[in-house]
Image (cartoon, rainbow, N blue to C red; front, side, top):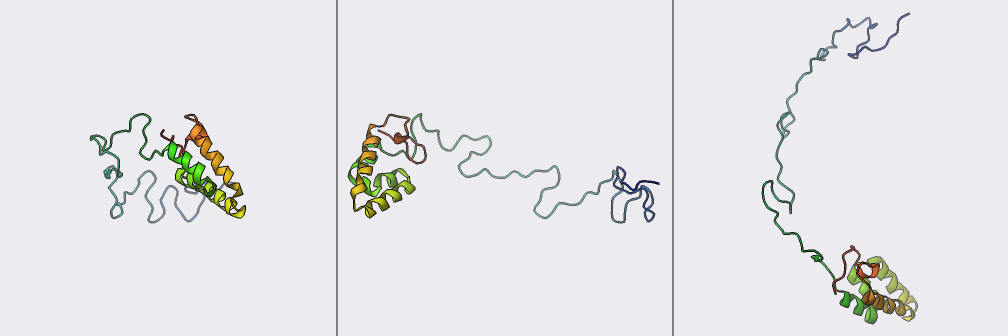
Length: 151
């Protein structure tokens, strides 16, 4: 009894309809790979296209278009004083959290204050004081993106 398993070329040696080692019609011989032309708009093998850099990235061999910000400076840095004062005076409505980008917490504060007829506005007042008294690096001294608040 013989086994009907493919050999190293994928041919079945015991297939009576196909001679041993011969490729099927339209198939390249074992080890001879047919090279097809590239699809339209595609580079030929070995020829790689150079794409332009993404916006904001320097082209190869050129200097960066924008200098790196100095240590401790961020382009959208928010004010600690403004956030704290908004928390003290309008904190019940979540204005300070809207300012800092914490939209979910701000909407929750607004809804709770409206449902409690303003009694829950003490929450915003306390958060305003915590923001003003926060030490650098604490969670109260950061906005929603993790950027430290400027003094």
